[in-house]
Length: 531
Image (cartoon, rainbow, N blue to C red; front, side):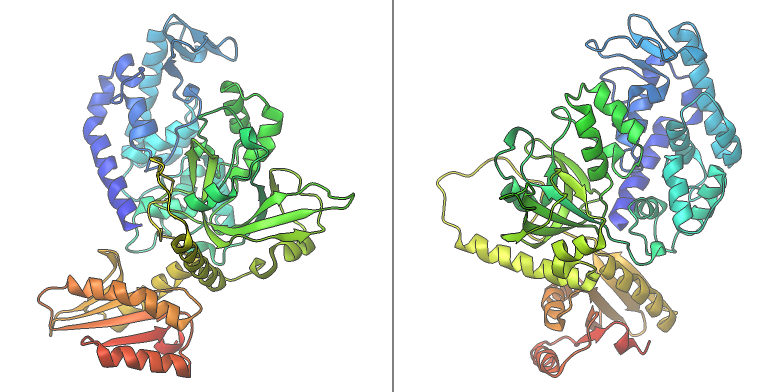
């Protein structure tokens, strides 16, 4: 996630250069919020600093005064006033000019308090939405003094899970920010907390879901092959071109209902429960794809055709796709299945599986599987799909449309990998107190630089059950990293995995050592590190 921190830090700097406090003092209504102006204050908050923390995708009412689209009717009632161009909350004034002056004064006050580190005073402020208030506070507060999480309810939920219970959002920001590991940026740390992928949460508590492959306009046709090709699971409720990324893991059903109503969702009562469940499926959860869940011959029936685990790619879990609709990134564990079960109760398109007996029956070997077992299943499935691709018949034309996957082997943030990497990094810092030790430098898992004599140790972590799979996956990367080292006397290559070597593994390692000119070894974490 180092790349994520770099991107966010650059955006943060650009925002402050464009909108210092003195510029906000002089800001006009058009500079605050206007259509087709990507340089407005609200555009920067909502879209241009989106990687820092999402507030986009909600109603424009969160900005308290906004320019309406020509096709949008004025808001009637609910504490809003309108003129021919703008809509605003009536509590700020009877005219657009009065309302904007009030809003601008509030923003200036938030910025001043944030720069002074007075988060408690920001929390006490009224008449300006908390979501925007806390994002403004983060952008102007001293570095690392608070988290880039702007939904108070979500922040308190995270705090409760980590044993930090306090009614004060301001205090929670400070206490959780203090948990940030050395070497990790505040942006990726907040991202990990939001997605429950931080090692602070310990073992991830998996949940299990069944998702249908026939839905929407293609209710009679399975979308399974397209999902597999794009590395996602999907559903499609709500209006067309309706991204709800900002509500992923939000837990705010009322906000989702409002979005559906504002976008004229044709069946909001049907869409709401399905989308709310879908949006709360998180990284590490296991999904079974069904071909059918309707009774057959008067008996309960469920046909499972694939299993997958939800992952994050390039900083995103949710993504909207024009063809499939709402998507969650996954790695497939097994595909092309034809598992028929006498199991009822899962006729809906998106269903959680809460019953323990049903979980064991439906998910089989993937029920209660460890990260190591899942990583091994992913590797086998990738190899299986590669073999299938090589067997495919040629075609005369290729589609110009691209899927969501960026490569054949997408980068997967695997919790077991991250845990080993994090613990190994801390261990090596103790063993080599005077060396330069970095994680993720030029994508190397861990690099240890010992200056006298010039010596570099390159570590590549792989989470697979098989020692052979770990070595095969790590060795090519290690050699590529070694090639880039210049002016180094000694380069040592170390592949690290979770499984001790067997007798046959020792022969494999010995063969590699005999034929490589660089020192190479495989080490099992934690057994081979005397821990």
